[in-house]
Image (cartoon, rainbow, N blue to C red; front, side):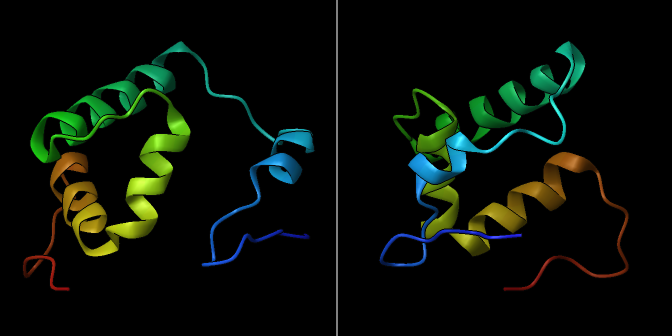
Amino acid sequence: MDVSLKSGGKMDRTKFEERKPLWKPNETHGMVMKKFKKRIVEKYNLQAGNYWDLYDWSVDHIPELWAEIWDYSGIIYSKPYDK
């Protein structure tokens, strides 16, 4: 699978958007993403108008992203997330 990257290691959105999706979320999956995005927007005062804004934040804030995923998803773990 060819993944095109921009400088700085970010996806080239043009080539990415030309690809045929392997899977499209149903309404339930979309709501989960919207709730997670809302949580990030409110907690980090992010101006995220769309998925790509959230993507850009996630690439620039990897430790915070994973800490939020652990907390939001309710993962049961023996020790807390560590950067």
